[in-house]
Length: 129
Image (cartoon, rainbow, N blue to C red; front, side, top):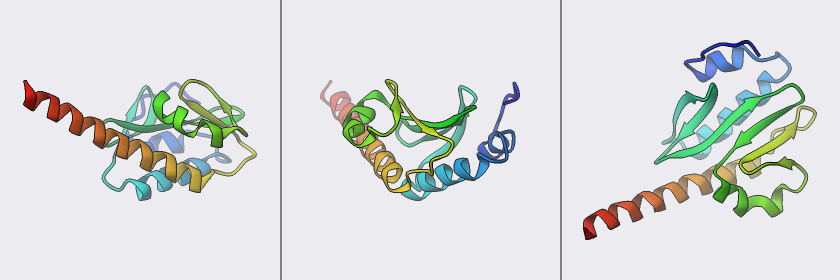
């Protein structure tokens, strides 16, 4: 990956190896369809989807591609992610494996719903003050 400052997800994807681009496009498509209200941006030089907060980042690496979610979201899905290498917030998927579309859809919907609940709780707490 070049040391670029990407401003769009399209730019990010175009700078990646041609072999990984279809997977990155698929991740983008799955997230956009699952949470159509989400806004795309670039943060930390990676694609990001936000809706009432961060839903997911994604990125390409030499031997894998990753989807990054909050640790709370990761913990909720950890039992279903056993086949992948995980960190506190990253799901590392080998380049040889397809995008787990159904699971990714569930994860990002869960993240968006969680963000909405947290935003509502924050509003309610402000009203009580």
